[in-house]
Structure formats: C-alpha cells, structure tokens
Length: 239
Image 1 (tube, helix red, strand yellow):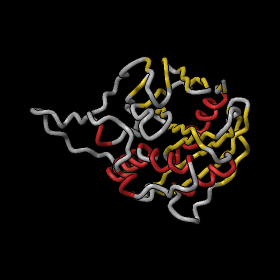
Image 2: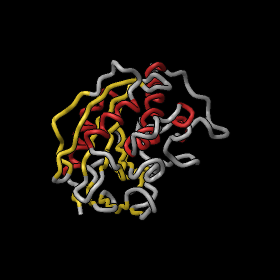
Image 3: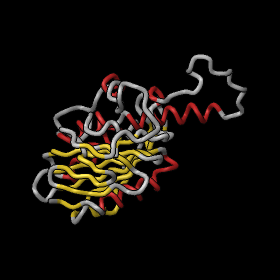
Image 4: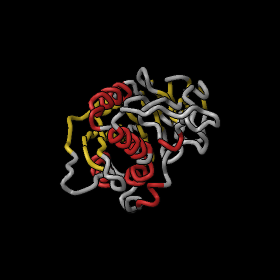
C-alpha cells in the first residue's frame, strides 16, 4: 500500500502541525533538545531528496550528477500535506512499483516488502520504485546499460560529499538468484551537510541491462535499514 508514514524521515514541508490550526491553544514551553529536532528534519529532507541524482548516475556515465538546485526540487512526495494514514491498498502506476499491500511487481520481477515497509508516495516520480518505513527509504532504478561493477561506484560518486568519504565494498548480496555488487557509504549531504548513510546494490539483470537499489537512512539506522533491504532483495524473483 502507498503510505505516508509518521516516520521521522517524512519531509518537513508535508508534516501537519497541530499548532497550525486556527484557534489552537498556545504551546507550552518544551524541554525537547531543539538541536536534535533540527538535525532530524534536515536528515529527513536529505533522505527524501536523493532520488534524482542517484537515478541519473544509475543510468549512464555520460550524464553528470544533478546540481544542487535540481536536487532541491526533486524531493519525493505530493504537493499537499501528507496524511499519517494509508492512502490506498493497491496501485498500478505507469512508472514505479505495481503493488497490492506489500507485494510488488514490475517489468521482469516480483518481490515482497519487509514488515513495516510500504510503497511511498514518491513511487515512480524520480525513480522506478520507492518504499518507506520508520527506518528510511529504498529507491529502485532500472534500465541501466552499463554493468553493475561500473554503476555502483558511479552512484557512490554522485552522492558523496568529498573524496575522502569512502564507499566501502561489501560481500555480494543475493538479489533474487543473482549476486549484487554492494557498497556501504557514510557521507554528508552536499547541500545541507547533514550526515546520511547509503547502502548501494547493483545487479546485472538476467534478461539484460542492470538495476540499482539504494537504501538510505540516518547513520544510526543504517544496519537495520540494510537488514530490511537485503530481506527485500532476497524475496526478489526475476521473471
């Protein structure tokens, strides 16, 4: 189902504030650590806005990474305020995951999202599939013509803030029956400077071409997000 989760990763412009309503009582002074709140909002915007740059890098080496202005306008999500309840239980978009609950299909594949994950509102916008949970987001990109071994380093280069942020090779990850090239990267967003973690999966599709899955989260949630991503990939059936 498409879900607009009450996740800490929900983009701030789409969150409904209880204090934005007319006649609402004045808020009592809060003791919450505002520095952490601001950081959480910044990380939210980073995670929701990575799709455009990654998508371009996953397609072809001829296209440069997105500019800061392009990245800023590519944040996934509707133009209206997001609800905290599910929107629909199934959908057949012209681009993105076709889904019924946690079951998804697409051109040449079928898979099942892990518990707690759902198709996101940005599904099929600047990506070929997007899912969200309270941990982070998955972005799927297909249609690559370069081999997986070339795509993953290029995707890492498109998102890392500086050359010293190393994309560390990991053991291959089963993506269905095919081993996927896997990298782990902790870096800072190029625009905001907020820390963000990526796990990149790139695979040579049995029918030809390549595909990329990117798991994005706050640094503290990278391992949990990675575990969920690898369960998702393990469920994948290439058809």
